[in-house]
Image 1: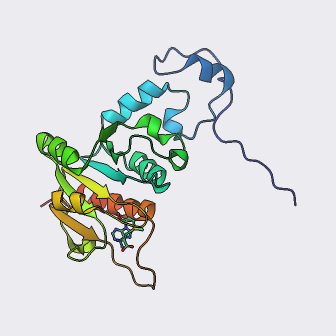
Image 2: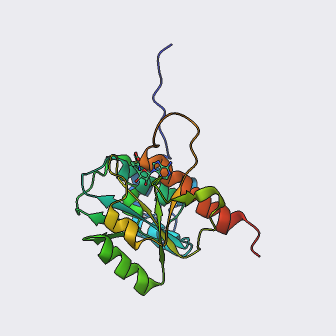
Length: 207
Ligand SMILES: C[S@@+](CC[C@H](N)C(=O)[O-])C[C@H]1O[C@@H](n2cnc3c(N)ncnc32)[C@H](O)[C@@H]1O
């Protein structure tokens, strides 16, 4: 059987022209094939960002970027899905955006030259830096009470979190593993950690 290409989204607007100022005339005329949830069909990008801003969660994510790790895109994509307040790139400014699938356009991106600069920024904002890595001395994510106002910090393929970053973190959390590999991919680890925050602060009964 031949594979059919499935077109996502919606075609040109049908019916009386809508007045909604959130709508984009170009998208209304030509259709909206972007990878956005149905709620945002035909919306201008700025209108989507403003709507996300009104209900962003209390956590940020940070990734160390010393070697253009391709996993950063995946971290950013999940940060969008979990509606993180901000994305922080520590180290090189340029990062491999391919895995982000343009979700970075709906995110607030901050850059910091090094771990100390991120820590300084976080202190001013009242945010705790929480590292995520399976290094000696790390504590289990599964039983750690994640703070509401925090920055979840991820390392890179190979080295993991830098010494300098570990020194700035209030805690470093490990994700339980049961197989033979030393670690999971940073994008997968980030998704687990962000979801742990969501379970704790969006779904759990607050004391
Ligand atoms: C592939 S790991 C590299 C380093 C890892 N410490 C090692 O010993 O191989 C890259 C990043 O993914 C995340 N990561 C991977 N596995 C993890 C785990 N089991 N627990 C927490 N973080 C993990 C961390 O953020 C880490 O810095």
